[in-house]
Image (cartoon, rainbow, N blue to C red; front, side, top):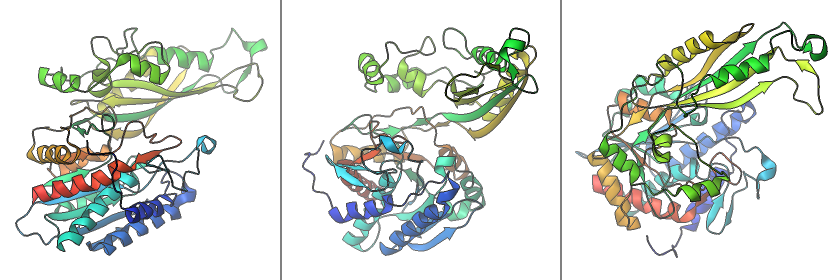
Length: 450
């Protein structure tokens, strides 16, 4: 790791602050104009550094920003992807400073979107500017495809990619929206789990009923929902849905070794999380459970009276939010159908059950030996003085699988965030040393490709 006394480009940081001031929350309709403002701000920044053919591509949702620079004859073409939208800032009262008034404290920049993904995206903008300022040109051809809907699972980007494969054709897709293992230890993620989001609705009587008059004699929607949810897992942590594990590969010894190479301290993790014990599918380590195995998690439950005090009723409706992380050749639609069949088979007597899905994303497995990924590893080692590790991320970036399959190009997940930076939570922040060293790393990488 380089000396911690890194000289930051204060102008770059001030520009990033301007970007972070825009509350581009894509999931809230009242921020629609703010999202557009962020897209316009980004487009203007790309024009200022010398990018060409800049477009604001309209969709039924938020715009896609496209730009390119294609004057490096006989050199590779790199497509840079990122997103300019951010998560809601709630709960506001838990922030130590206003989420859209960026503030630097202890060499960290605090704001919503600081690490996910405006700060990491802006690394690429400033790397391109640095290279243009040095040589008046870029060492490779560059295309940028920046969206404003990643935080709502990118509904309009896949059709755009499929309709414009020639426009977006490239030799590699470069994305910075992932994290280091820890401070000073770079990582290139080579696996992302797929995703399936569901909502389960249970209905019994035609209205809530008085628990004194009807209690004990009619089905209770809350009870029945709990029984149904409990049926989804075995006691050992395994998902009990018939056929759920179809398409899940047995991990190879090489894969298990790559996972085992990632530092992990169980006692430290329990202390960090305030837990007395970890829990997961038997027969697998924590990092295997959270990185290369599929899951089914209950995310939220609603039933009965939720106000202050008590209301003695037998609720007639109950619901739960459920999410699955998928691996290997698990198909999200097939998994949905299997869960739907399980629900229909196991619903308690007197209940109607309806299952609706909202998000689907296929799993992604990337080859760490690919030359484009290996050159990224070399660039990390040159700048940080440490070889990167190749973790398997338990999360999902749905668009990665689309880029990989539709464009038939390797995806390089060259992240610069840290796991401790509170993405999606209050007091989100970005370590400025990684902003500065990230620019240097991306510059080195693009030069190495050229």
